[in-house]
Amino acid sequence: MSRGKAVRAFTIDELKAQTDGVECRKDKGVIDEIPGAYKDIDEVMANQKDLVEVVHTLKQVMCIKG
Image (cartoon, rainbow, N blue to C red; front, side, top):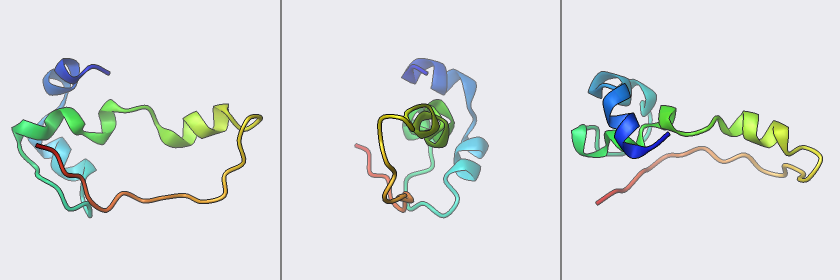
């Protein structure tokens, strides 16, 4: 979704919950980076299974913005 839509759609509490375990800012200045604003990577990869072979799965541990 767009950054503006993400800012309107999510709260700081949702940002904190969705980024639990990730080292990052958790304030209104970064709410547009909330994971819920992005497509689900598992669904994206499943839709591309005939084009790619998954060899590794990464887990986000840090997010740096601004």
